[in-house]
Image 1: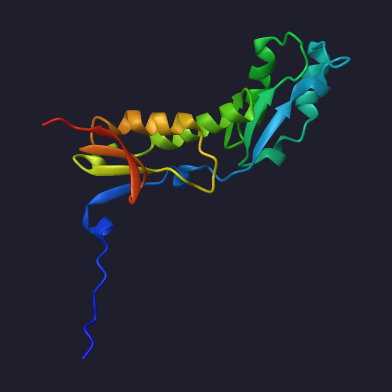
Image 2: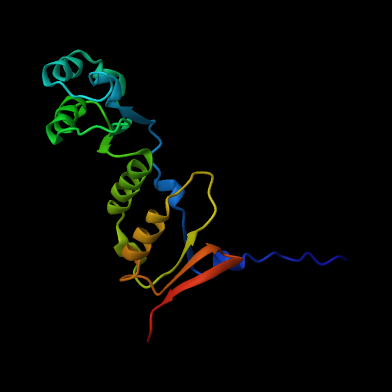
Length: 171
């Protein structure tokens, strides 16, 4: 008679909680909105012309999208211009920032991480998953670490089978 061996899942038995930052990624489209084309000769902001562009632009096309406002020309753009863009896109966009797509990604992750209830990680052993299909900015790893440290018993990075210890609460 052949004995059937039961496979034990030691990771599941360890009480280790895997936190995957990829799950907190905002899936909405990201758009870099360059105002260069709205400038006179691509370098000078003329208020009246700029206001006309803002007024006549189809802002509805940005419903539930994430926008990074920028100007790729070497121009001096007054702050009010970006405030005007902000007021026009506010009813439509999911998120909008002044900067590039990398900054937009940071803001999206910061917002998502801020919504996590960290109390549920109190006195637990947590591993932050290292590999993902989504490019997670380094900022997100630092932010999640910062938020988890007051709660967790231990914090690791990587996979359960091969992780890097980050923090262990002293007794």
